[in-house]
Length: 271
Image 1: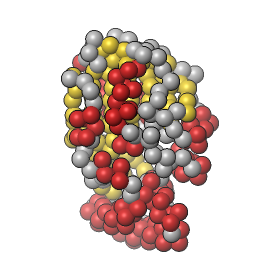
Image 2 (image 1 turned 120 degrees about the vertical axis):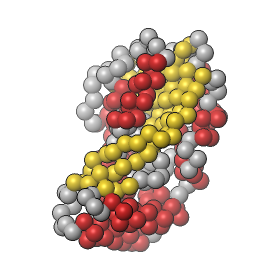
Image 3 (image 1 turned 90 degrees about the horizontal axis):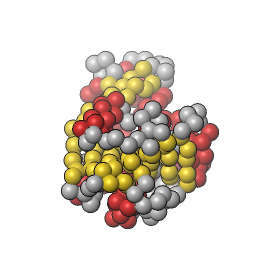
């Protein structure tokens, strides 16, 4: 079963506020893959491990029906409460037991989630529910992020790395599946027709407050917060103060960017 580290109501609320859709470059890679595979059926797409629905909404313009699934009731409740078009719906279910008929799904997406799943069982479900010639895109943002503001990128990124080092002491072992750029996920996908792309670069606009909120959405920070609330809050506060000092600003609404690298595993079921 998938880990339930994002299941709490408060964590789901933070996730909804600060997580983002797949960045434009990653969207382009996935869209180009579908075009190259000459996908002709766009009836049903499923976003597995959808969290509070950020990546699900991206699919709504392309597919007739889109279903986001997540093991967390709190995450799905956040997704349902957020604005979404009528062709999007959400279900609570584990990634390893999808409530879809055999050969019924045109496209499966999972963004920043597969490393939490029971990967062999999930891959069996992917193979079961996809239609012949159906496609899958399993992607994630990787750990080598940069915080960009004017000429402060190097110093801000170093502060982020120090923050990450501290919270990584509380990381679940499954987070480390991201460290191999999803090579484990690529090897596990049971299709001969598959691709593994690791150098997809994207930029996400934030404010300083938004970046700190994004940090709070990390599972390891939430585990740290539960283990030692005062120390976790102190680390976040210290990181905030250092960011503002390096940037030479006082407002948490100052715009910044997170520059990140993504990996994607793309595959197509045999027709």
